[in-house]
Length: 124
Image (cartoon, rainbow, N blue to C red):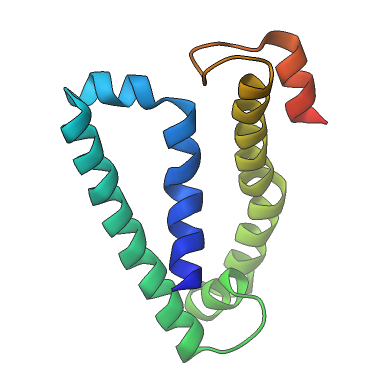
């Protein structure tokens, strides 16, 4: 359950802090927004359980790399690992830091752009 909690927190957590007002507005109300977040949490939980099943079936170090290597060959595993390291992980961390710097600088999420100071904090 720890892995599912981490996965759900990563997938949904930053969105709740970044744009809750916009989500509620586009969903039509608070109830609908909470239902959408709950449905998203259920989908992410199913993905986390599938990932746990893969980990139990193939207990090797490497996770994503190992699974993709077995399914599609070494090139796919290498390409995903490289992209994950240089693009996906760094991009998600930058978004989280940008939202965090917005709150630190007195904003209330993505709708209050912290400007160059927030960008500098996210980059550093």
